[in-house]
Length: 58
Picture 1: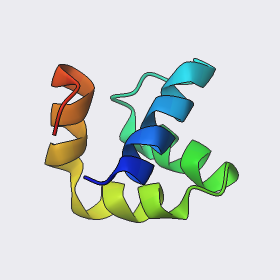
Picture 2: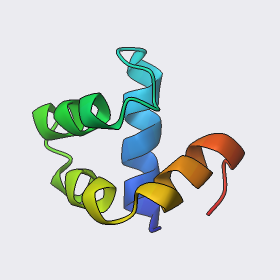
Picture 3: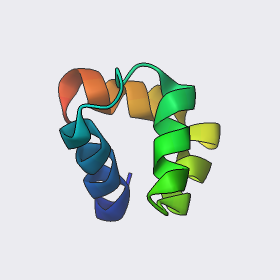
Picture 4: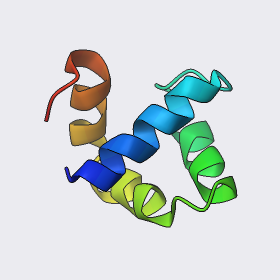
């Protein structure tokens, strides 16, 4: 997971608009904010995303 994806995840988390385990909502918010890399990343790398949310590392 690259730095840009991490920053986008942390930005969405900081908004407090969704539970970060609600991946479809995270994708919607990412799309609204123009974080298209994150939208694609969530499609292909859900396990890596969940690991990052749980443990804060990749």
